[in-house]
Length: 111
Image 1 (cartoon, rainbow, N blue to C red):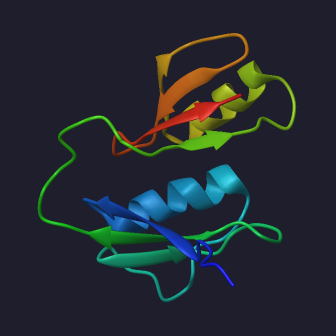
Image 2: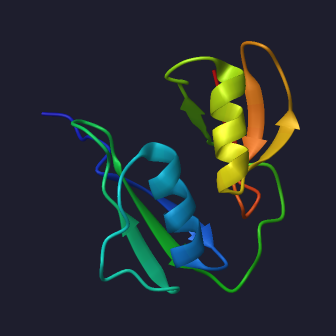
């Protein structure tokens, strides 16, 4: 049997702030024992990896080598607007694919 992805971990300045953003973005909750040092978001629905956030002393310095591609449940523009209201920023707008950054600058795509 092959390995599977149990969780994805983000280094962060404030684990709880980043966990709250991603929980809201993905329609799930932040684990009640989460703190600014470490936070956990369980995948919404079945099958997705869980997400850990860990406080680290250094800040983000370069473009991500790995990123999430989110599928909008409706129009891309509507999902982009929702994510902006949660704290994301648009890096590269597009009709079918928009590149965004979460509150700590981690890039992701909405398609």
